[in-house]
Amino acid sequence: MKRALVTGGSGDIGAVICSRLATAGLHVIVHANTGIDRAERVVNEINSSGGSAEAVSFDVSDSAASKQALETLVSAGPIQIIVNNAGIHDDAIMAGMKAEQWKKVIDVSLNGFFNVTQPLLLPMMQTRWGRIVNLSSVAGVMGNRGQANYAAAKSGLHGASKSLAIEMGSRGITVNVVAPGVIESSMTKEVFSDEMIRQMIPMQHAGKAEDVANLIAFLVSDEARYISGQIIGVNGGMV
Image 1 (tube, helix red, strand yellow):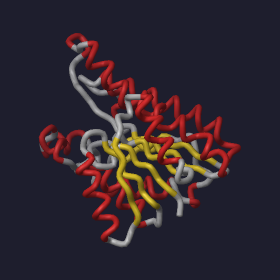
Image 2 (tube, rainbow, N blue to C red):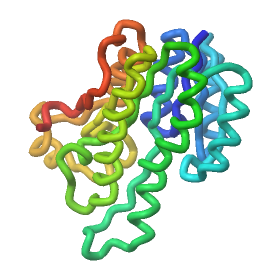
Image 3 (cartoon, one colour):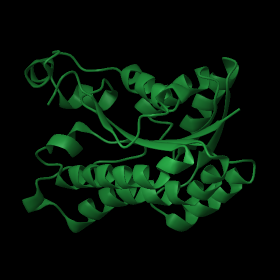
Image 4 (tube, rainbow, N blue to C red):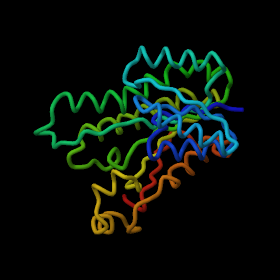
């Protein structure tokens, strides 16, 4: 059974991704930072439904803590699928943005990708098979007012992913980016009114977490073996 690590797996979208990968027959490692109780709930739901999962907690922005946690996980066998879903935003127009806001978002959303992925590459390479999917955002493609830090982190993720796809191509490892638009969650309901969504999105409605999870499930499957280095939007037609 292949093992899949989903960072931020305890969140609204992350939990759905974890459940979808479990239904595909993967052993899912559900990651959380401080919300280990939420990760455990996701694990319990997966296991009670006949799937296989475990929980892990560490701060992806802390390179030493990440390395230590990942070494423990790899001691049980290679992790061949990584879904880098962990990310935060701390919005402000740049003229009023504090240095800490910039650094915090970059540390989690971009440096966290490196801290998690780099230690897992050599064990994955030795298996000659792997899938890495990095979660971005429409903001990383189009930019967004008040999110220069978030857009910078996600755009950086695009370049890193394309470069890593080139490096890993001969090893049977694919690297892709999924860039969601407005996805239904407790946060988006507070930020976007129905009228705003109708104006922003050609399909005139928000997406669902399942729309993101289904694409990721395909990208980590054998069927997607020739797809790598791509940035794929899940955004209802926003261009």
